[in-house]
Length: 86
Image 1 (cartoon, rainbow, N blue to C red):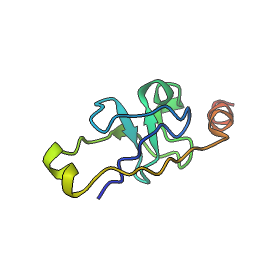
Image 2 (cartoon, helix red, strand yellow):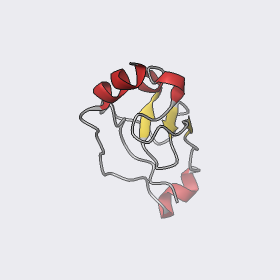
Image 3 (cartoon, rainbow, N blue to C red):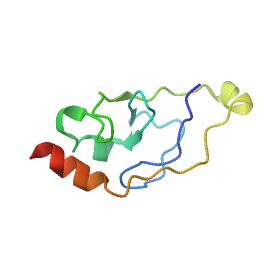
Image 4 (cartoon, helix red, strand yellow):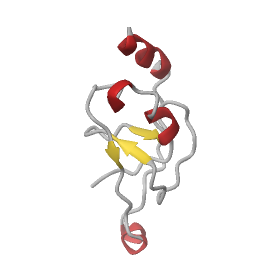
């Protein structure tokens, strides 16, 4: 089951669990739309995998399976993005 992380891993912006413009990779790295738009070829700067829109868990299911409260931040996100462009 997806963790549904609460923040963008690059800018640390809070992300609502029902935000339709949140992106994830297969490792569940989580990105806001603004940061994802800066990634070359819309690839995850951590694993280089493609990004997909994160699914929205139905409210009823959230009661039994809540979103994660653990924040994940990649401190060198911007450097990874810049290096992938070089």
